[in-house]
Length: 264
Image 1 (cartoon, rainbow, N blue to C red):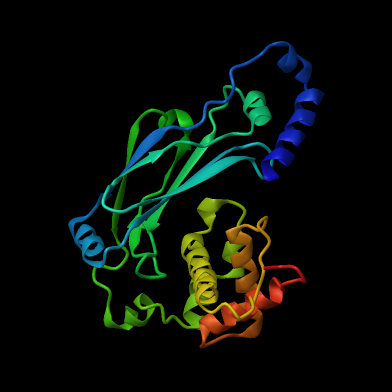
Image 2 (cartoon, one colour):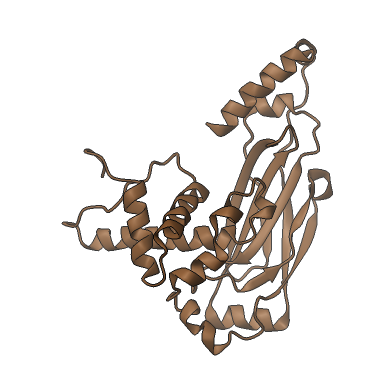
């Protein structure tokens, strides 16, 4: 597990720099986050969301700066339907990691977008919340959102109906951007992973109604959504896909995550 590995590294660091003192003096475990995020939409954005029945997607990331990669603490995702108030809570930190990082004012990053219920595209342009947990804990923070496009122009109708081609997809989802080390640097990560997950869900839904048909791919549970998306984008870039984006995405998943005997 990623958290377990990082926790083990922290133990070694703590031991090297006098970790014995930490063991001799019990400290209060790191306090998990609990706060609220109020999503405030402009009138036209609110009208659009209610007209389409679209939801709001909220993602919280929690980590601390420690070395080049930081210390990963956890994440949460939730979907708002009619409510505009997100309750961020229920995160469970690894016990050993929480003890070692007692008192650390860890970092919070909140990303918000449309929930991709009616479209693979994100039609919300929202501010990003980022700062130390002390800035958020026990409080209500506000995020302002507007429509990414005031009114979807006619040329965007194909995108809104999910008929995006490969060229359009790769203009938003490049392997270079998805390789950025920090979540805040990966501007279109939510859209890119949302599209790939949509293809996966469509594939699984089709199989559930067509039992005799075999799975085209078998993705290990340990593989993250971001890593799956990176693999798909790399395949699409190599293939030079222009049209039939969905078919090429399935091909990328099939080639990358081939099913083995015994996979279901």
